[in-house]
Image 1 (cartoon, one colour):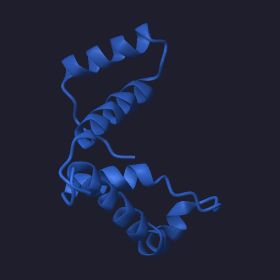
Image 2 (cartoon, one colour; image 1 turned 180 degrees about the vertical axis):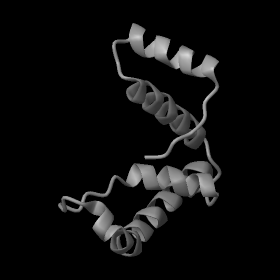
Image 3 (cartoon, one colour; image 1 turned 45 degrees about the vertical axis):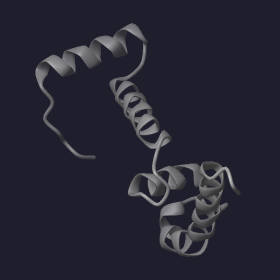
Length: 99
């Protein structure tokens, strides 16, 4: 967990939203951030850092392991490059009408 300083006005606004929606403050902040990330990565240039993030989120790699963090390096080295290449090819085909 990390402590961050947030202006009091923003804390009040977030708390008010959480109260109105009968959700925790954590849930409200998480949903706002998820929505923001989704909007940021929807329209990205193939090959850009944003595209990498988009493909990483879309990969949704399931390992069958309880703790993926223990195998994160292995997953990134073995499974993600193939997925990234496939997605990049798909994006290039979609943006080039000649293909």
